[in-house]
Length: 392
Ligand SMILES: *Cc1c(COP(=O)(O)O)cnc(C)c1O
Image (tube, rainbow, N blue to C red; front, top):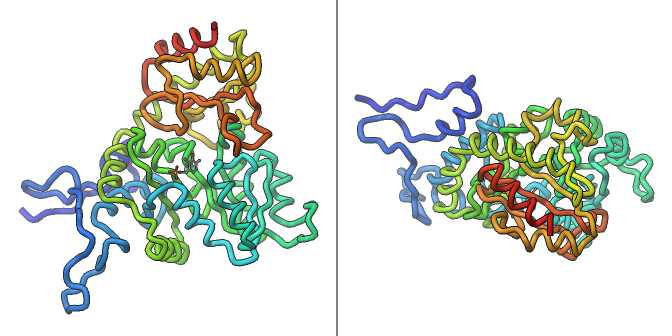
């Protein structure tokens, strides 16, 4: 029997793609899972037998199935690129901004992305204009360079999109913003970490590059740190690949293998955690110890209508503002028994964090805000634990 390639069809459902993409070729005794290839170098370099891999900083066979699967989930025409962390992927994406260019970025972007962009700006690499990403008119003005306070009225070279944002959960009108960015010649990078491709596909909405902290939902078990980028542009992919090779931001084969293992259950995990997030959001909304709930799935949420149009579901992160200020919010994070007080998100276990305990968090994030990353535990257990901590 000759081995035949996996018959992978473009019209498989995303749930099926997550399970079936990137499998080894079919054949007698072929493994069902790709092996972990621990090799820093590959035979044949400089000889007539030279292949394409050459050296472990350029490629590794363990990366390929993960990159193929993520690319298929995001609807990218080319294999994705895995990086050593989400921030390494952020750095690679920011490298696409020309020297002296202008980056338009949500003021509530992921903290590390904001800090890195600010550092690049301080070093004179580019200028940053921060915006309320939910305010489409303001973002468009910032992209054009009109209406900005700076003397610099040049158009932007890159638009950074996060939707929903961290931790304010603002929803961006990705399609409208992407076309406004393209009108002024700016590239669009969408950090899709919070949504995952199960919920939002930014490339389909016009983004040029989609970014992931694979650390979060894609790997899904809080046991690896990895990042990834995906694009359908040959030119951009070549530059991003070269950035990875030259800056050495490569993932370890074992970590990438774990990420693919996690990806297999992405659909189930997201389905469960976002269903539970919806249940918890409804109950928290009427809890006397909770002043406000931010969750795009709530009909009263400012991002609800947009989210309903643009997303499949509403994600699994929700934020609450606890009555009684910072101390009361901190006490809730300390009094939970099942929820774990920890930063990060997107794992099978539910995490809770008062974001402003971090000095670098933007001042516009309320002091009493708790970010809840809903995991896959039973909704009633999660609710009972939150309710006892809120009752104290
Ligand atoms: C965590 C995170 C990052 C950074 O990823 P690391 O894997 O921690 O380097 C970037 N963007 C978002 C939205 C994140 O949540």
